[in-house]
Length: 93
Image (cartoon, rainbow, N blue to C red; front, side, top):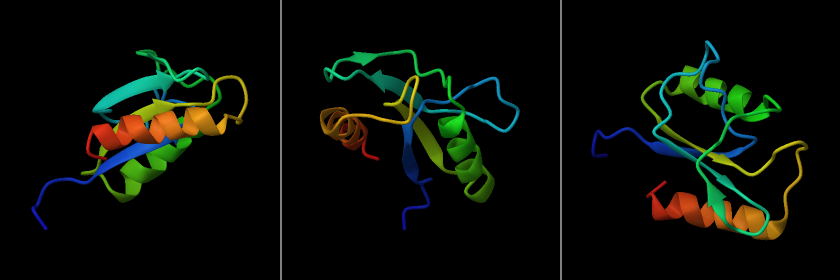
């Protein structure tokens, strides 16, 4: 172990930064269905925010990266999910 905090990508509906149970998010992105990216990862569904809060509660030193793949429903294509995993892996998650 290096003593560095673990990096965790929350591949979900994004994260709502103003939420009281959310601390710092190291980076974030939206992966669109065509594989392109956008900097806005605001959570409109609440699921990603809940997942991020649960991770931060159990692992407060974890460095979180928000990868939004769900927007108005909890559904995404395989291409979108693969792009999200590739984005996270390129950031050493």
